[in-house]
Amino acid sequence: MSKQILILPGDGIGPEIVAEAVKVLEQANQQFGLGVELSYDELGGGAYDKYGVPLADETLERARQADAILLGAVGGPKWDTIDPALRPERGLLKIRSQLGLFGNLRPALLYPQLAAASSLKPEIVAGLDILIVRELTGGIYFGSPRENRVLENGERQAYDTLPYSESEIRRIAKVGFDMARVRSKKLCSVDKANVLASSQLWRTVVEEVAKDYPDVELSHMYVDNAAMQLVRAPKQFDVIVTDNMFGDILSDEASMLTGSIGMLPSASLDARNKGMYEPCHGSAPDIAGKGIANPLATILSVSMMLRYTFNQGAAADAIEQAVSVVLDQGLRTGDIWSEGCQKVGTREMGDAVVAALRNL
Ligand code: NAI
Ligand code: MG
Image (cartoon, rainbow, N blue to C red; front, top):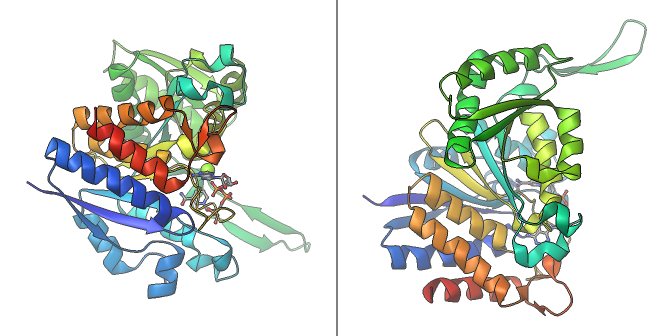
């Protein structure tokens, strides 16, 4: 059966990095007989320009039909002044929630070739390989009521709501345990149960789910301590499971341990492992159109797609290996460049990965 993949290049550097990832996907398709079929559409600012909204209904329908989606990134200064409800980022939140993509996997892996690019000392980060499992469709980013208002005494007040239901916690906890089971069998659940009611339920439900995973060692940590431990001794973690906002912040923090945000892929999965794959970074307007963006996060997102949605572990491994070969060859885009390495552009980097894949 053919595999339908919807490509959403997006804005800024999106089209540049996605073009390279598609070349790698096509090479893997040939080499491993994957049977992928690609179609293209717009999300974000490009969609606003074309359809008047950041996510058109017909695009959402195409996304529903697809087995997997590859996204570049959305947003940019061109759309900063439009109606906030139509901003590119709204399209991204909408597609995640409409497709039920609640399970966000963000691996933070330090390639040994890039040890010099990390913000921490080599002895603290060498061999770092952690996975943050972030709940993506609930919590404070989606909770209601939310309001900006003026009180009777004339003072302005605003509030958000942080709701989590038992079923939302249970399904993301299961993702965390399942991931831990195939890795080092250690799961750390991060919450703020000393203060927040939603976190107290989170902890209770995670404990309940743990009964089905006696082989996984579960620990709990408050988010403020987790933020500290990530820079003090990050290798104590293997899999972290946490809510939407804590996961947003901790995964950005973890990204800096690996050298560059240009290296970090992500997967956003629904209950049947259909999903959307995208680099963790944004549309990088400061370098858009210059041909210098690092395409590796997007290429590694293709690898995650083959692994999680299509169960093609060998093809996924091969792409990761090809990336490693290219780093061994000393090729670096500007964001990961260091003395003695060869600086290359987006397209040269993509071509090098395709060649390395072909020659594996
Ligand atoms: P950003 O991630 O786009 O850029 C931050 C810094 O990292 C910039 O200096 C950029 O040049 C650099 N950078 C990012 N990706 C890179 C790559 N592949 N290679 C080399 N350098 C790279 O974050 P920023 O500047 O805060 O946001 C820019 C726009 O992107 C905004 O409109 C924001 O809303 C949007 N955004 C979109 C996301 C998405 O589509 N998932 C996620 C984050 C931001
Ligand atoms: Mg973020």
